Amino acid sequence: MNKHIGSDFDDLLDEDGLREEAMAAAVKRVIAWQIAQSMKAQKVTKTEMAARMHTSRMVVNRLLDEKDTSVTLATLARASAALGASLRFELGTAVTA
Image (tube, rainbow, N blue to C red):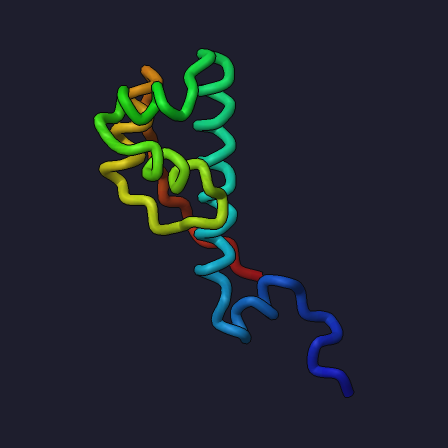
């Protein structure tokens, strides 16, 4: 009998110990996309964004890199302030099967 029949992707991530890593990657992808969209709408270049954040362009590149999950809350706060946006985080109840 195949132990994976009837299981779902979340179960597989749990078994492999990868759920938190996958969640961090998904959240970062959304954050990077939202920042990039806001920059595009406001016609803000990476160089201008770095100046507004009082940081280097390399930091902005990491911020926009959807695979880099090591961005700090301070960097996110500076980015949102630079774009005139609010920064909100929310914890929700985990959904279990």
